[in-house]
Amino acid sequence: MSRISGPAAELYFQQGLQLSHAGAYEDAITSFDQALEFYPGLAEVWFFRGMACSELGQYAEAVTSFKQAVDLQPDYPEAFNNQGIALFNLSSYEAAIAAYDGALKLRGDYYQAWFNRGNAFDKLGCYQAALDSYQQALAIEPDYAKAWYNQGITLSKLGQYEAAIASYDQAIAFRPHYSNAWYNRANVLCRLGLDQAALDSYQRVLDIRPDWHGTWHNLGNLLHKLGRNPEAIAAYDRALALQPNLYQAWHTRGLALDAIGHYEDAIASYRRALDLKPDLTTVWYNCGAALHKAGEYETAIAHYEAAIKLDPKFAWAWANRGTTFRKLAQYAEAITNYDKAVQAQPDLYEAWYGRGIALNHLGQNEAAIASYDRALAINAEFYPAWYSRGVAFDHLGHYAAAIASYDEALRLQPDFPEAISRRNLTLNHPNRLEADRDRDKDFEFPSPNPVSLLDPG
Image 1 (cartoon, helix red, strand yellow):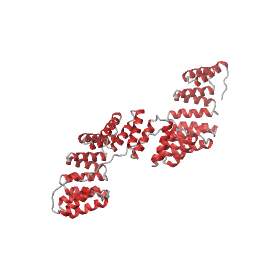
Image 2 (tube, one colour):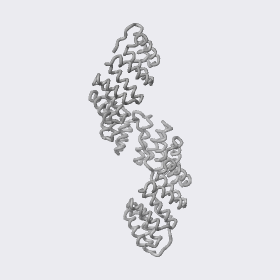
Image 3 (tube, rainbow, N blue to C red):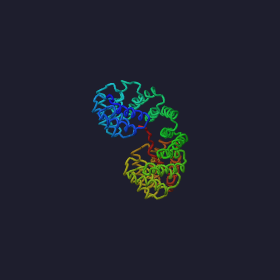
Image 4 (cartoon, rainbow, N blue to C red):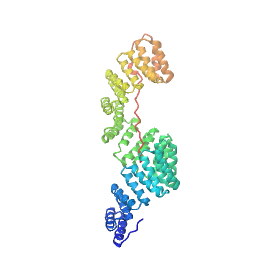
């Protein structure tokens, strides 16, 4: 580095260093500028001026200072590296890589520059180049926990989950309290379905950082997935106590409440999510489903309509809206909605099935059978459609066909009392004409999976 010449310049330079160490970066920059008024060609002063600018988030000014340093002293690897960091913070990733390359030409074992280079390639989506840079850093400095951690993130983006876990494990081996590594490790374990290991990792995070709302949220998601819904709700409550505006947690809390039949509480939770973020299509849908289960059919329809307004091809919303109209005995409207559902998703056999039930209620038994057949062509194991198909044949007086359909339903679901009862009635009273449509086996449409992991990146 350049040596400072002259007492005044030296005084201002040392003063700037002391102010920087004290965190008084604006005053430090003033002192560095005063030193440069005496000797503008001092690379070291430009370097530390750039460092102070970076600390203040003045990255463009920092880039200018570091460029002055390397122009004055081309063999200054630290200036190249820090110029790259400033460019990275300006999202100028390609220029940052060029600066890191400048540092590495001067010092090939500069592991921090290799690490920073990997970060820039990762931001550009050049994951293999990022991995190569991280591996270079780790070959030089094997206990560099941050490089193991960032390498884990890049491997995860490539879908190399086992390798990502191994990388996080290395980071943790060198830094046992590395909470981000435990956290991302848990997220990858979730993706691999290694639930108990993921639970253990989330717990390790919370042992280190009990105030991390994202961990409580992800723990809640995992507990909900495992059917441990009261524990999931408690985890979501912890997340929301720490971050009340975390709309994802209000949503998933609603799902957990929904799963244990607490529909009113679920509806309230969904609505808190929608207050925070009104454009959540899936939340409008799930709230509609909870309202349906609570018997609030008109309000459920309005919520499905809101979901459809956000996504006109949301087949499940059309289908559930159809089912709700069917509950209100508005069968023609139900059929219109089921038609919209199968237009959006022709293989949605549940919608074909619901459409058949609505047609059956209107006495259109041939059309109902055709709709059940469409459902069964997609999923021949869907026993409710075999049962309802039998009911339609019964109404038409086609008793042999009805019994064959009941038999198929019972083959798939032997413990099916409605099918047993109807089959026996058809066998014992072959000329009966009475209809009992309200006993049709209904199907509860599921919720799309909205659960996502909060990741620190």
